[in-house]
Image (tube, rainbow, N blue to C red):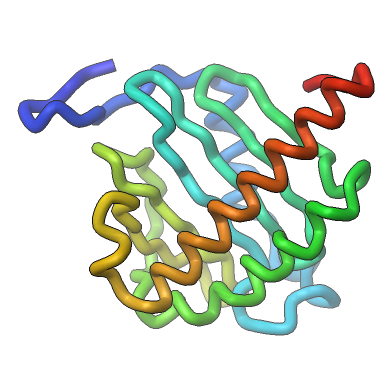
Length: 173
């Protein structure tokens, strides 16, 4: 991992497994979500720096499926199958992503975040769009960015609660 002159992170050590899963999530076919997507956005891949060596990728789809992947190869998957509480916030996040669509730029490459910015990738049938959100300055950002930021933070809390319940039930991942 390298630290740039501003003291922020610019590289993460990642596993092949993480890169493969992230790439698969970014290229998940729209046709598999057609019945679930009520808006042009059928899924989201959000890269969230959690520290100088830890990067979390939140993957959310219009059908309510939601998974977490970490640069070190760890993952938390299948929560929506075990916890109904995960489905609604996931659908709410993806359903509201249309608000961010105009602010997101079409992309063909998918770099990992640099610094503290979160990279929000919107999956649409017309391609992938990306919008960075700076959590420190989100209050000065657009209303759409603020809404999406709040919704994915709430989803992360729900996922953490589900993870704790799984761990307590001996299903810990």
